Image: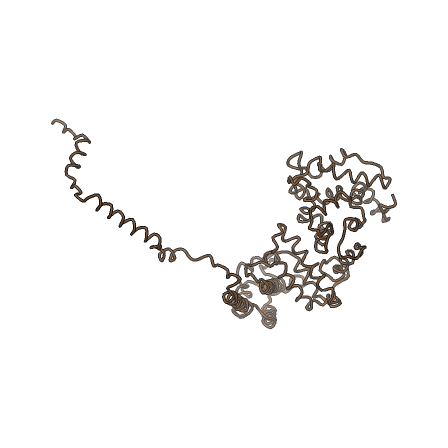
Length: 457
C-alpha cells in the first residue's frame, strides 16, 4: 500500500487562515476595547486586587515605630511594654516558691550521698516537677537533667547544682526584665543615657557603695558605664544589646557589690567597686595639674610610670575626642581601659588604631620603626644600652607570625596572643624594658628578691 503523503505545513497554514473568521470591527473599535482592557487590568493592579489573599499567606513582620509627634501612640506603646514586662515578671519564681522548691528537692533526695552533696534520681526529679507547680515545669525536662548529669554511677544529679541552675535562670530573667524597663526605644538595646539611669538607680541597692558621696555619683556612673561601652560597643554605635550585657561578666562584677563581706582583693580587682572608681578618678585629678577638669598631652604624659612615648601620646590626641586639644574624663577612661586590659581584643583594637598611622588596616616595617625610634630616644635619655630596630623587628614578627610576612593586622595580633607584649614594646619604655629583662625578672622572682625599678638604670 502506497504511503499517504503528509500535507506541507504551508498548506495547513493557508487552510487555517482561510477558515479564520475575519474581524470586521473598525480600528477605532479595536483601540477602544484595548484601552478598556488596559484600564481594567491597571486599576486592579494599582489597588492590589490580591491584597487580601497575600495577607493570609504572608504575616505582617514590620511595625513602624511611632514618630516623635505621635504622643498618643508612644504612650500606648510604653504602657503595652510595661504590661508585658509585668506579666513576664509574674511568671518568675519568687522567694517563697524557690524555698518551697528547695524543700521538695531535699525531701526527694536519693541515697547514697556523693561526697557531701545530696543527689536525686530522674524518677524522683519527675515527682518533684509534678508537685512544684506550673511555674517550675520548664526546669523539669529531660534536657535539663541530661545537662546536669555527670559521672554519678547511679545516674543521679546534684540537688545543689540543679537548684543553682534554677536560681541562675531566674536571676537572668529578672535582670533582663529590669534592663528592659530602661530600654526607652523598646528595640532590645540600651543607649548610654539608659544604662546611666539603670546604674544610678542601682547604687542604693549595693552595700559596697554605701560610703560613696552623692557628689561623686555622676563620676561613678560615668566610670561604670564606660567599661560596658568600651568592650561591648566596638563600632561606637552608642548602644549595646541587652543580650550582650547579660552574656558578659560585667553585670556579675557590678552586682557582686551586693556582698557586704567582699574581700579587699576582690574590691581592688573589680572595676565597679568604690576603691577602684576612686583610684581611677584620683589618678585623673592628680594628672590635672592646672585643675581645669581636662588633661593636656603634657599632663597625660605622667600617666602610670610616665614612660609612654611622646609619639604615641601625639597619636592619642590626634585620634581621640578632645576639646581644644585637651582630654575629658570620659575619653581618659577609654584610654585607661585600653592600657590596663591590653590582652583584650577591644583594647588591642584601640591601640592598633593609634599605631596604624595611615589607616591602612595593617602595620608594616615603617610603622614599627616609627614608634620604636621614640623608645630608642628614651633609652638614650636613661643612659641604657641601645637595641637595634632590626633585632626588635625580627622578634615582633616571630611572636606574631602574621599571615602576610610584610603586614601585621589586628587579627594577627589577636590570634598570636602576644598583642599586649608587642604594643607595650612599641609605646612604653617600661613595657619594653620589662620585655628585654624578662629572664632576669623571672630569676629574681624565683629567688624571692625584689626587682630594680626602671629609674635606677
